[in-house]
Length: 225
Image (cartoon, rainbow, N blue to C red; front, top):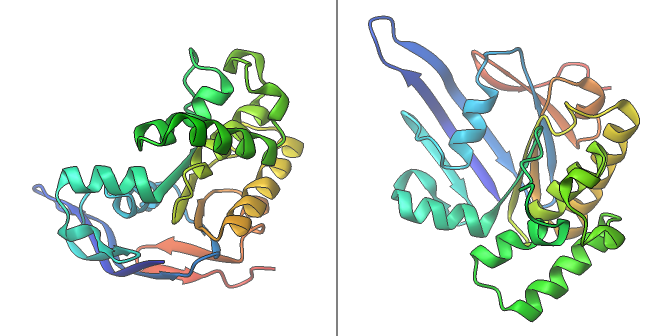
């Protein structure tokens, strides 16, 4: 599903700064991986490279049959719409759209017909326990509910890969546990691969495996239990 080979990213200047070097990762369909690491080690940069929002200075990123390093900006935009789902710490729901409209947005961008769009949106909202909140505005929802909207939006178009960047950072422990359980269940049910970037060991332990990003690349966490 996802393959990173010898990935590198550096920022040039009088004192060139190497952010990532020698990053390798193989991720299969249905696999849910957590990535941890100290602040400033390059976790967000890694997600940006995987999503094609930034370009590596060395190595390759393959998502399914697509080599992201060989695509131009327009092709990368299309790939993100079709194959990627994003869940962020700050939710990023649009305040002037209803819950259903927020979730349906990826389908609208892909040109899915209205009847099919409405059906898939309703099914997705039911799956995340928000079937009765379809007409609500974001200001009427709790933080946990907003994150459920973000998960529904990330999965409604059936992406190959879901990227979750600190998705529980703004939630209380009970809401965080509920959201992570939901994210894992939905990813597994739909056969998507997922990467969770987090500082929380409790959050990371919901994944199939935990990797630590350091100056020498990704490595398995020594004591995952």
